[in-house]
Amino acid sequence: GIQVEQSPPDLILQEGANSTLRCNFSDSVNNLQWFHQNPWGQLINLFYIPSGTKQNGRLSATTVATERYSLLYISSSQTTDSGVYFCAVWLPGGYNKLIFGAGTRLAVHP
Amino acid sequence: GAVVSQHPSWVICKSGTSVKIECRSLDFQATTMFWYRQFPKQSLMLMATSNEGSKATYEQGVEKDKFLINHASLTLSTLTVTSAHPEDSSFYICSARGIGQGRGSYEQYFGPGTRLTVT
Image (cartoon, rainbow over all chains, first blue to last red):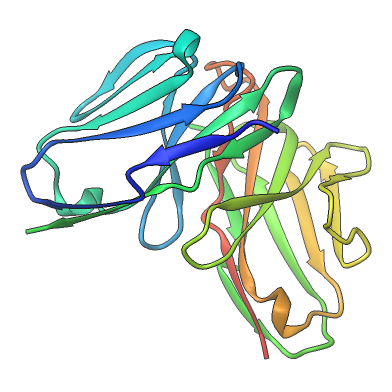
């Protein structure tokens, strides 16, 4: 089956630092989403990004579908950015399944 | 828009009892709802997919008689953990995908999760 790999698994930042999270996938996918799971467990949709680049405030994401990877950029990190970041992909033809990566656990210290 | 709620947010029950968890799409109609399970410091594991008015499709290894899923309307799905045991303790999260969301019909929106503890 398709493999979704995220790196790094853990990341510690000082407030104000920038970071890049990576998501590699082993096969062609229909769509890709990035989520932030906050410390209370709520998953928050960050980006729905099958290809191209999108920006939302301090966050931006780029997906290069032909090279099977996506990047999530966090600029000027804040303590509220702490949590786990997941990427998840839809299988071609399997519109009912999101396959999640293992996540990147981010801790931002003041 | 695209808000999904879950109830209860946490529940403690005794071994052998059943627990029902509700998942509602508040501002859109969910043609498909999904139930996930998450263990501490792990990723989400899909348990089952339910389409309104039809039987749920369970992932391999998930006991359909233990985890009963009902998707009776376009805004409500329920997960009932029957005869719960301590190993069923986990964080259960639902998500919904539906019509009228405007951003493409594949995007899923997640509920806040339900933390189940079986004693």
